[in-house]
Length: 192
Image (cartoon, rainbow, N blue to C red; front, side, top):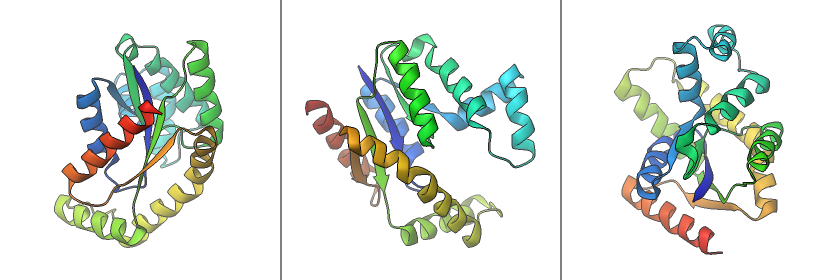
């Protein structure tokens, strides 16, 4: 059984690698963005509350995010493990996730951090924006998102590094090469 999370800056390939890890390890990939969209679409009480923030362009508060993640981790498809993508983003969320897992007498097995140079990510995201026609992904917005990532995740990454469960993998290169590095890193972390 594998319980893990994937962390990385925007454009580092988290979503792509999460899908591949999920397939290869037979664990469900859980994206907080997908959870938000499903709750909003299903008009759940949490979805209605989250929509108020999302409609205003605000971050959804930890209290709402935590409840959604807790509910999702109580679904039966996570019994054989899971891969969280996009959570936790703050140290308070790390503590909350610890409580959720401790209630089931579980803990995280590995935290995978995809690393990449900011200039490479800006180049990659500008290319993706051009391909998809996303006008909101200009260089200033991309750099702001990268700054937020660095501000928010530094403490989270440090917390998992202290526990000895953080594994860093270079996220730059052809997708298959990155996947091979990721799978080798997971295997090594599980053997440790």
